[in-house]
Image (cartoon, rainbow, N blue to C red; front, top):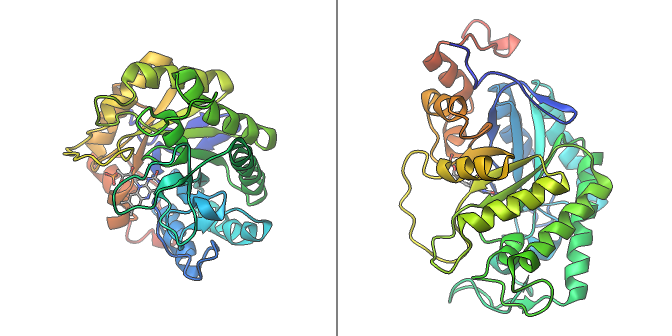
Length: 338
Ligand SMILES: Cc1cc2nc3c(=O)[nH]c(=O)nc-3n(C[C@H](O)[C@H](O)[C@H](O)COP(=O)(O)O)c2cc1C
């Protein structure tokens, strides 16, 4: 069998050595509350690179301080953040993995002491702050922050940028009719709800010509939310703007009970791939080599993203290779155990 999980994947000028992606995961470990990378981050990301993950996407990294989910999030709102991110990248690259950054703004889901901002002045839940409705000036300032974040990502040596448009954070708040109640050109029709993301993509492209991914929530678990038809519309627009891959997650827009099962979100990645003719990444309870291989071989997605399985085992690629009978190369230093 020709194992697809271990076949390279080329996107623009970047070739990933395999199809295994470390999904972005907030570590809430910027202990001084200033957005800087700490020693923990270096060990955390380099370990997964030593474990032979093909692409490591770092956690949601805030383009503005008010866009953090918590005070301990990583940040990229100033040039001073570049150096720490550069060190993370050096560790990742040492093992032949590629490095991605997830550029993010939490919008109304920012759990901070200060004022929060969103398309509309509605709180996520009773326990969360009511955000300030963004003025056009706030919108332009935030789009500009995504552009600056992209420029700094390039300086820090990242290979891939992913925009966080999922889980009910700011971009998702603009996309969804459940959270976007605006009456100007940024709200109402789906064309208008897409405008903020469209502007963010154009801004990023001013600084970045490398691979560009966007993560979206492909199901909102609410009858008045976006439908698959809407997601395919957004995906087609993104494709026409030059986005290379849609990383398809789900939920987080409004509080909802989700009952996850193995591969519960793969169907959304598959429908968007088929419907918009764009590469996709599948994520969500993908835990075994066979499961990952099935998704790729059946062309349901082009990359598999793993989160918790890689927290449990940084050497998950080795585990999957053993399961599939693939002779994966390991770090030279570990040859006697590999
Ligand atoms: C600790 C933790 C932190 C996470 N932080 C992020 C994040 O920063 N950005 C994001 O898009 N998803 C985040 N997620 C979601 C994961 O990327 C992934 O989509 C989800 O856990 C499902 O995949 P899994 O079943 O392989 O864990 C996080 C998940 C976990 C467990």
